[in-house]
Length: 326
Image (tube, rainbow, N blue to C red; front, side, top):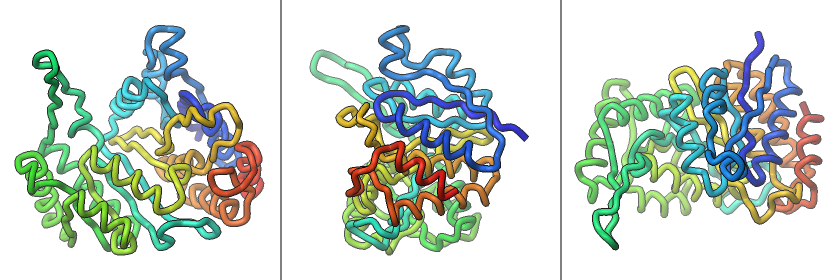
């Protein structure tokens, strides 16, 4: 069976690490048809739109999408793309790897981030000069979807500790609904869980990440807490992510376009390649996904490594080493 994969390199180092993921996927035993599409800053400069309609259509019809990074047009690219694939859950693992220096070497976390609403709903307005507002949207339906996904993800992947992050002591109506809904879902699924105020949780994650496993989060909290976790394990270059819908999905590294190193050929491909492993999981090739992860882990332990990980290798050399391990 051939799987069509939309490939959207985007901007900056996205154009360097996305080919690395394609090379790794092509080295597996799965049959892929890669269709490259355009999106991002350079596309807007040339065509007036950051996300062309043909890119939307290809991503909507593909079996999955690989996305690299977007620069200044990120909100005009990644948010609509997540909508195109029907994504309601953003899965962001953060774990340490042998051989790498890490602030907290016992970290093994997965952030399950609500992906459709919160302060990312895009409802902003200027009431009058000097006064602007942002509307935060929390619905019972979306809260139920993410809670069910999070609790089931934890059970399926062997995580005993589930934490629901919130700020219901201040945002009583919105986060209050989020927590109440998660509580109801936990009761229906017979799952134990804890709750934590998101600001206090940030402190506890830094001090004792080993106390946590799966963290179910509203949209903005999931974005910020997962970036915080990147600092515990060695940087954003190690964090993959999946934007999961009912049938379709999009996979991207958590890092951005990194314009300061773009074009130098030294970007760390690990997060993008690990995102490709999540794509393999999504398409129900768990053995191939494990092969990719094992290859990445072996290279992270023995090298060659890019400069952000303390090495002096380039993107291509590290990618070749991963493919050789496969």
